Image 1 (tube, rainbow, N blue to C red):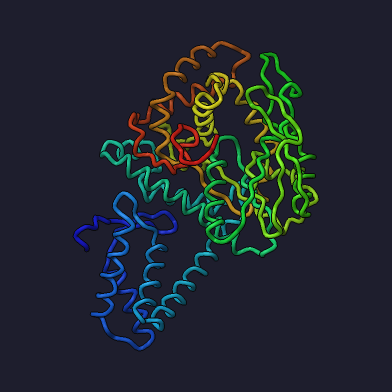
Image 2: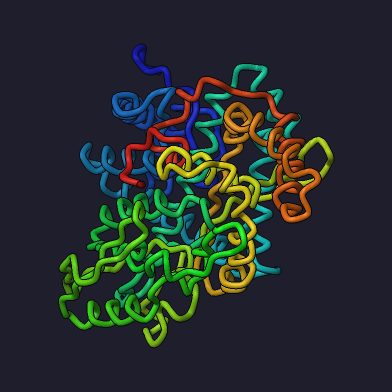
Length: 450
């Protein structure tokens, strides 16, 4: 390996973290050469050193490459060095392997319950392979000083999921005009939407985002419960008819004036922002209720690609039960609402029954309509949340223990408190990359997510 290159591992598409080896590059080139009648091992080695030099100029132990990126470099060098025939065979072999991968991906459309069984299985296998399928194993990795590595592995697995969705979108008919990113509260929709837009734009697709958050009705129009809390989790909190009308007008080539919503005052102002798209543009929608029928009612389904994201953590707690996905999202929303929306985390807990009820009625039943499911959970969020929220949950558990009106809040506080107490806390959050979708909640994201 080059003296200045400290690369040790690379990432496969499925998120597997495997050792880097220049010899594998040399062998791949030699196999392609043999297939077209060549037998020069020395030339294959020479080319592999050149390729390694390029890899090490662009990647490092802290930022390892994807296998696909290395393959791109191999193709480029083979062509530039005058080995077009070998490059052609290498490209054909790569394409064949890609077809096999796509066939495997297509299996994830077979559903058992709400989430595809194949997806759950893949996440579980990944967690097991990375010693992250139990709190005990997570704690052991933290004790070994591997928190930064856990962050890296988890984020790479998520990135591969987003890229897989982007590839499936681009492989669809050219008639695709709408891409929807849907999912329950605090699943990571906003950053995922930004990342999808980035990947799709690199593939030549013109992306125009329609921010449906500006279509909320005034807060005063939502019903209030006995505690003065508004139920704004229902899809009816949005002006679905206006969203639908504007989407149809945009697709028809018309200009629309979108509204603007002030979250501080809870009021909407109509006809504020002009919007028009090109005939080749794709409308990108990030919405809690993106799969809910009324939003896209009357629009040709063949023109819509629907992505669903959920915190599909496959990790068992010390009680032998899997950690609940909703508890992860509850903690994320607490942190986000407190930091960016001046919302007391206690209010998030007591409001959460509205969130869950809306999910059960208006989100989960529509998962089966999604074209692809992304896992938005990252195991490293647990030690971070332990440090940030454990004391709060202890307090809430005691406060609501004997309150018959707050049974839901008490049960959630007790369950999350027990889980967080079993996790080793992490106070240094610097290993979490600025590109992580988890930073959408804890802050420090490079994306405009608030």
